[in-house]
Length: 501
Image 1 (cartoon, helix red, strand yellow):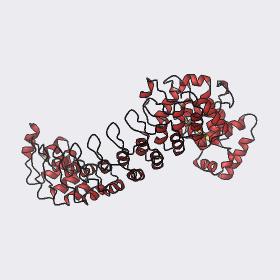
Image 2 (cartoon, rainbow, N blue to C red; image 1 turned 60 degrees about the vertical axis):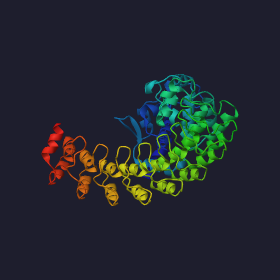
Image 3 (cartoon, helix red, strand yellow; image 1 turned 120 degrees about the vertical axis):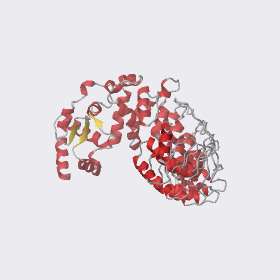
Image 4 (spheres, rainbow, N blue to C red; image 1 turned 90 degrees about the vertical axis):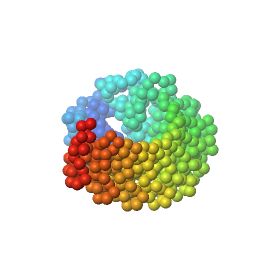
């Protein structure tokens, strides 16, 4: 196929007039774009003229023209209107022959930035929710110009970026960018604090542009956007080490500045797992490694929840409290156990200050959270510590076994029942047993495991008179109903009476 593609590309280059340029440019865009392009996006991209000051709609080619210029190497998905290469082997061929296109990412960045600098496009981007029809190429340019520029930054792209970013990033461009990043734009709509050009450059992590903007003093380096994020916070969020170094290198930058939730750049870097960024931030003495946010959560707590072992290790090298609880009494160990991060659990349990059985404000221990979520490995690790009570009830009298049974976590139920301290028929404050909850949720496997234990009463009523059978019947779990009816001790009439009441 390589020979066929080579010959076809040479035929595209040999076309007369503008066909050669359009054909090769279309192949470059399709093969190097960050996502599949719709037909109208590609047509608008190829209509942009570098060096021009405004967009000329007369330059927009038709998609049929582009298909013809590409000599059969591209196709259009009629339903989705997506333009694609004719076969995945063509993408492989183009990737293997990098000399076919000269610095494609720089070229794409230049086109995107030229488009964003057009006066009519700036006017549109100053508005909100214009939709794709008003500017079909705006969404792609707003979201991805920086991705391409970070990969290959030409002098032209740098100049165009500075021209664009000396002003606040357009509202519509900001909406597109933040939506793609999974952030809500609502907070940015009615606030004088705009998402600035420095915020944007920091978001993308383009060091040269950030350094230039800071040097010429376009913005206050601590300027807040709609959620009180400073540029440093965006760089930390996205793991841009170079930009973080640039920003913390300026004395004017507050490296410990909290946002609207009380989270500093260190919190953000820890949450997203950027260990090197965390190290850089901790190089500034103003940065508090154990500072709580408005919910009382520390960077260590956030890193533990996400399972970022590298960040956890970096933070534990500093003077932090590894057992510090948030405003709800939950510790880093509690979060690590809850989300099943075995490596982090082991690291934290290696510290003397960490209590492996510390309850939160609801009386729930790390084991309780791990059991509810069905994390077998964490359950075993915690049970390996003598201080851990495997049958400790919370404020509602619910034990780890009860939570595991409720959620149908068969393997965790087996592990817990392997400890003699665990009462398999223990009732909570409402008189309900693990079997009662397993019956309610229809977990046949857990029901069978519990019924193997002599201590378990298959017909024990709760404080409302409801039995495991009545709960299973009420929720329509036929399999559990059949299993329970096979037990000689089960009185079906009592369950029917309880359901009627």
